[in-house]
Image 1 (tube, rainbow, N blue to C red):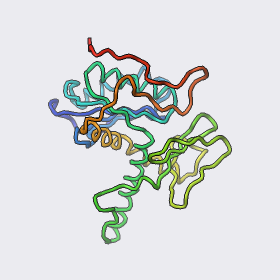
Image 2: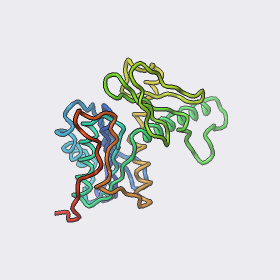
Image 3: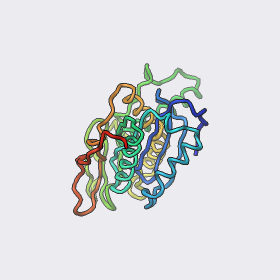
Length: 255
């Protein structure tokens, strides 16, 4: 666990993501600055470990649940079990605490994190060379040139580009990238290049901060999701399971 200890009175938002092989739980300010993070290999015990870990994490951060101002949850794409548990936990907390909830695409957050990591690396290199900063005016990121690749079962993969639906790559096919695009790969050891995997780990390291930043912006704008309609984006479903459509009815009575 990393982060600063709150004074127990400062407002905070909570972010949860279970879309990859590493669970992410983070806290941040309503302004979108991350101030606490814990992450661990997911394994096969999401349902047993997630909620107790969140409770311990908030306690270590000295954040009272009454001081939470919103819940941010990664919606995938990702595997069935992790996303199902992550979304259910986030929804349960939001419902029980009467908080707004925002679903953020994990793919979009990873692309934003990759762009930030690349920009930070470039800025460091430029500064070391004694040159003017190459960062675009206003601090804009250029995540449109990054393409994210994730596993979709044991053989297939999916490609995620900024602002477009994921594309399935069936086994034996390789991504068709433009000359200006850069591939980043997550959880694809042995199925992607070493460079793409290295960029993927850099993006994973920034996932929590990206979720906090993107989620805080939507919460500040009043752009919360409806509990009944917020659903994960699965890359694969178990046999016989249909895609979720948010059919659960959430009582407006918190009791």
